[in-house]
Image (cartoon, rainbow, N blue to C red; front, side):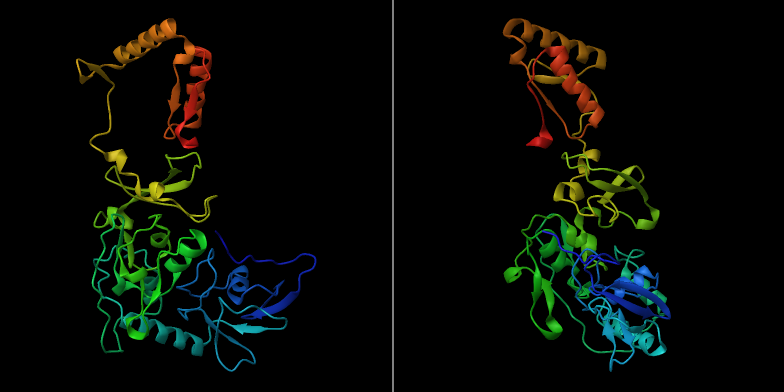
Length: 361
């Protein structure tokens, strides 16, 4: 299940609109939002709740702009353009409102950037830096939530949640699971599961990938290191035949976490295996040398001895029972070239078509 807003800048049958944003003029389809049109003109508008792959929400109020003739500011992510519209994105009045809204968000946000997992990669922190917010001028009570997470993959810190709704939307619109939603009202509003049970979803981690703050974090990489000290390597997920593009975050030759970039064919989305199933690389149970079972126990041997043993047993079984008594099952963790060579060996070398691949299951 996937829905997103598509920008259309021309074509037959489309109602077009000529819009002026900060003195720059552009003609786009009338279903284009002000935010999308501004991006085409390379005019920056700050956002927190907006995500290009999700339907607009307008909850954070960061993207407010002024429209000539309108009595009050509007959210640019939800407002479509109209012909002759004149938009101002960065007037002193708008910037003052944006700063006030940001201060209100920060007034109910923990001041623990020094130890937060998202520090250095936090949209809220970036905006606070951009607007020069150091102190909180809004006092009062802060939300405090009990932490109850029995799941193995996702850490939820609701006190850092800014109610942007990204996690809710990605769970609904991309995964089609609807495992979480907005709950309660007013000051105690929060994102939660039904009846506030522990998460029992697919654990795809899409909610973690779109969270702009440290409210949602993968448990496998907590306290493993900041992003600034990590080396990022683009590679391919080793599990199924889908071949999702992933980025491995490595420090001291250890994979800390797996993410995926938006500008890939899988658009940054991963499944539970692709996002959280990477610890096998450092597993102490991973085989590093060939082993032969003798007298009920495995013994480490050299590669020459192991290959000679396999060749001898294959020949014996084929001679006694025929080629079709043998079969080969390949691994998704091998490259395409290795899998091609494997099936060629089974078909041409052994003489049977009994070959399959785990990614087809």
